[in-house]
Length: 170
Image 1: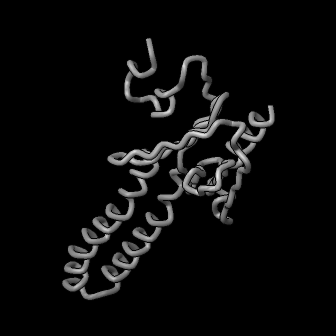
Image 2 (image 1 turned 90 degrees about the vertical axis):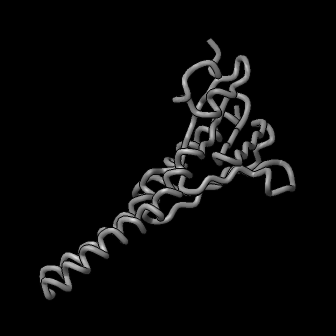
């Protein structure tokens, strides 16, 4: 059975493998990128609880009835785009190429043969190093920067870089 006939649980890139092509590494953005915005929402709610405990009961109740739904709505508005980006972005290394895919309605797929890969750059913040995520850019032999593969907040970017370095040298 071909991969395209299987269920949709497979990654887009897995379904697009050519005959004899083997997937070596498949990565997505890290779920840790949701944490800062979630902590911000929790901090606002903590302030609302303090106001409820220390403030006038009626004022605090009104504040609670307004602030909690607004904070929840703001959190959803902040988180949904991140979840969509995490679920719709992937970068893969096969025994033949590097392929990246992003988007849901407008899908952008970039493919570069391994012999055309020039550099792999990883940038990580302090938190990114601690939580093992960072930005990765795979530069190609072309002069057009739009041909480069760039994935923001990739989970374990150093693992991907090391696998790509190992297989492009082989």
